[in-house]
Length: 184
Image (cartoon, rainbow, N blue to C red; front, side, top):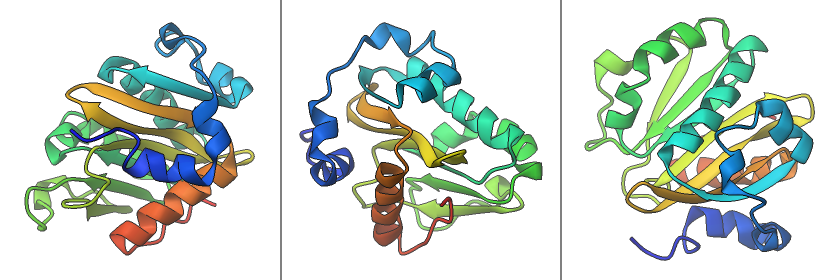
């Protein structure tokens, strides 16, 4: 894989250079902190494996479900989405909109993954193919997890409560995928 700072996360950090300079507090907190603690911290850089990111992703997804907020989630491959498909089918019932972005092997979205009030987008052949993102709307605007796989099973990225950072990330993703994500 290429330099982890040469793709999507790098593009966000170029717009907000002070964020890339913040040091990780401790990667051990990822699997033990609750969402309230991440929100209180406001921002956290990390270098982590899948399990801690899955933990943080679930908390953001649960927040979106409980507060009936829109959600954007990316999966490196559609096979990764298949692990959570049934949970998503139940979860999205009361949510206004869910965008699911994955690197589909072909541009045709399989009919067995289509969920009401959801939009599936393929990020195949884009700089989003290795991105793990979960963004929803909170009390101060969009917030969430933005990470990028730099080697098999290893991710660098950040959690942010800064709505300007999330809006910028959503804008870049929208431009890349020729779409608009209304999570303002």
